[in-house]
Amino acid sequence: MDELFHYIIAKYNYWASLVLLFIGLYGMIAKNNLMKKIIGMVIFQTAILLFFVSIGAKRGASVPIIKFTADKQPLLEATAYANPLPHVLILTAIVVGVATLGVALAILQKIQRVHGTIEEDEILEDQRS
Amino acid sequence: MMDQAPILIIIIPLFAALFLTLVGPLGPRFAYGLLITGLVGSLGCSLLSLGLVLDGNQAVQYRLGDWPPPLGIELVIDHLSGVVLVLIAGCALLTAIYSLRTAEQDNPDRLNHYYALFSLLVTGLLGMAASGDVFNIYVLLEISALSSYGLLARGQGPAYFATFKYLIVGTIGACFYLLGVGYLYIMTGSLNIADMAAILSQPELQESVSVRIGFTLIILGVWIKMALFPLHAWMPNAYSKAGTTTACLIAPLMTKVSVYIMLRMMFTLFSADYVFSAIVWSPYVIYLASAAAVIGMIAALAQRDLRKMLTFIIVAEIGYMTGGAWIATASGFIGATYHILADGLMTLCLFMAVGAIIYRTGETSMAAMRNIFQKMPVTAVIFVIGAASIIGVPPTCGFFSKWYLIQGAAEAEAWVFVAALLIASLVAAIIFFRLLEIAFFGDLDTTGASGDHGHSHQPVATLRAEAPLSMLIPMVITAASVIILGLYTKEVVNYFISWSVPLGI
Image 1 (cartoon, chains in turn green, cyan):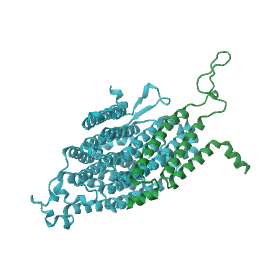
Image 2 (spheres, chains in turn orange, yellow; image 1 turned 90 degrees about the horizontal axis):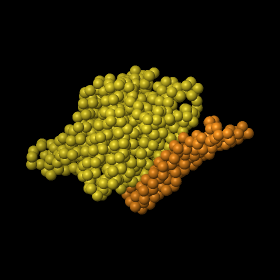
Image 3 (cartoon, rainbow over the protein chains, first blue to last red; image 1 turned 180 degrees about the vertical axis):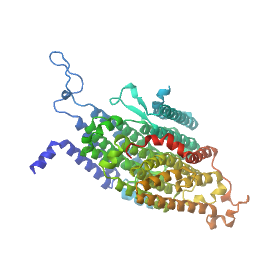
Image 4 (spheres, one colour; image 1 turned 90 degrees about the vertical axis):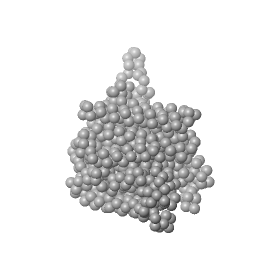
């Protein structure tokens, strides 16, 4: 039990994003309301964004701009700086996520206008009739 | 200028899309001209790049901003991606020419916005084929996916809900891909495909669980995107409810480019050795692909709606290509790759012919095929050429890709896949002969017994009403290329595809 606890604590960031990932997946698959599906989708995407952000974080590290020590020497140790690449990637992925959300909401609005509802079972019934 | 061709392939349609959003006041014809100009430029640059590849007989690497990889981003055009780029740009151009009447019919207002999305979708697809960076592939995948949501949602009423489902499933697929890239980035610290491939070939990484999870997530994401059975549920409704031009653009290209990405991931990022030795998936994937081929075709047989029937045929074709890629023989790989080209062209041919038939008759069910040889003889012949290629009749290209696939499957002794290919071809034959029967004999209660005589004094239903010239010309070109690609199979395979056959299979 203790070992399992340490196993989880040591990599808590992965577990946190994994839990969020499944909450999002559940929302997208199981919810009947289309708005809730979209919320699930956003949680799902955010889980992946947090996963990427967490792998770029480093304890005691600073932004990747070269620092100078007290005697004016540049500090050239990789441990002193955080890896900026995952964060930069995620900036792009956030933009993609926002665009997806925008398109999803626009289509949802159209669905509401055509079918008069955003509940999946009612839409299916409306399509059959 | 020549050495800038690789990046211009992508930049020209991207800027065309930007300008297209602004030219609304200049009228629909101007937007049409601008779209065509952009796509002609892109096709020209694709051909130039392919020429560069053939000149040097090696991959052309283009460094963006001259930053050397792996730090910089690069485009890599080799024999395989060069051919796929020409296919994408060519199919997009033909669809653009074809769209003169149908796009205006489907989008009476703001046609320029429709064309902007069209151009953006092509940008994404071309970028995916040319990119040498896994994260760029993700971004371009989403660019093409987002613009395809916009295009598909411009269909009729039921299209909205179908597109919504596609959006949810497509996002899951793309997110799986991104997560897989994350796992591989943790293990390799790189995003450049060539650099990652070199790092991943180290023995300790070959056995790493994280790398295996990364591979699984990427492949799963791509399978969702390419609608491999049983992950195909989003596709038939989304494609069959779309406008005619949208269906002609998206149906042949989106899934084929996803198959191309799968091949790249399997054999360029990872290696044949890793995919077939370190992971023992291939027997199961072959079963899956066989099921996709047979079930897709049988589902197509059950459809009354013409376009829905064609989308189920695509599900089956995806099964062919997946099976070919996973049977681990050189012939199978050649078959899968050649089938990307063949299927792109023949699906385009069929979707264009069906689009023209729907445009003239206003019907989307099989009843639209009634007396089609009298009403639209040229379109009907083009439809038959496309159908012959799907069934696999020589000399159309569909025959040769199936030949390679069956040969590869027999070499690998994957008899299930051989049987699936043969059964699927038989079912395809039934599907199209049933349509021809309707075309020749029709239903007796509408046109009477005179329907099959061909006299000039016919009832209204059999009057000549050929598709307009703007639709006929691209259709004839597509049908001709289906046959030409078939006649020059040996050259295409020798000059382009055989260079890309991965080592170790």
